[in-house]
Length: 72
Image 1: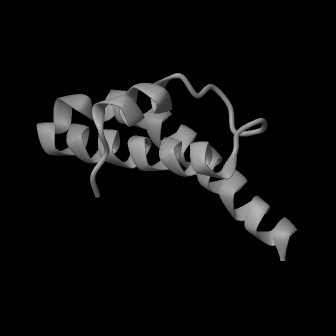
Image 2 (image 1 turned 135 degrees about the vertical axis):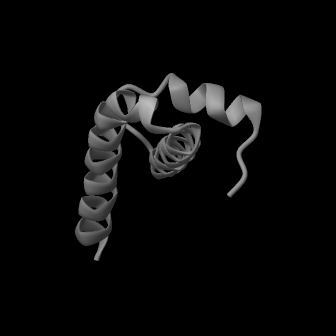
C-alpha cells in the first residue's frame, strides 16, 4: 500500500466521514491503516496513541460500509 506525501497531507485534513467523497473516505482509511501499522512497528510504548487511531479507523470503515449498502 503506497501513499504520496500530498495524499497523506490531504488525509490529515479530513475531519469527519459524513461529508466526504468516496475517494476522500478511501484515502482517510488508507492513511489511518498506514499510521497504525507504523506505530505498531515502533513498539509497545506507542499503544496509548493507537487507541484513538483505531477508533477513528473503525468509524471511517463503518461509514464506508454504510455507503456500500446504501448504493446497493
